[in-house]
Amino acid sequence: RVPVAGGEQDTALPQFDWMLRAGVLDVVQPDMYYNGGLIRALRVARAAAAAGRGIAPHSPDAGRAAAAFLHFASVVPN
Image (cartoon, rainbow, N blue to C red; front, side, top):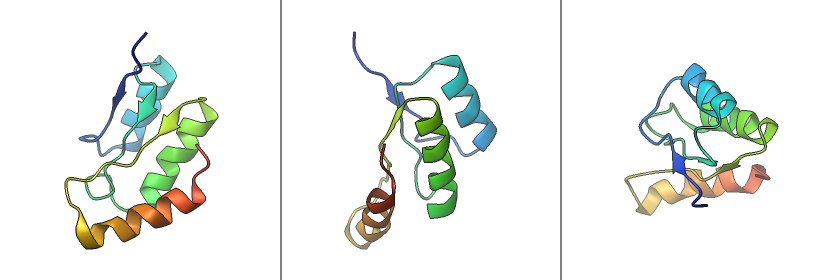
């Protein structure tokens, strides 16, 4: 069994909810920029935790953008 990750191109919270309810993804990857920042990514993380799924934030950028991901990782247990 190969875990499936995705969601980096999705921007709507209802889309993430559907993917989690339908069992489409094992690991959800909200993009911090496409998805609307830290607060929205945290909402996706809470939904993933409630569904028993992992989360790995996605970004096409590096450098100073890493600060937002470190903040995110410091408060998300899943």
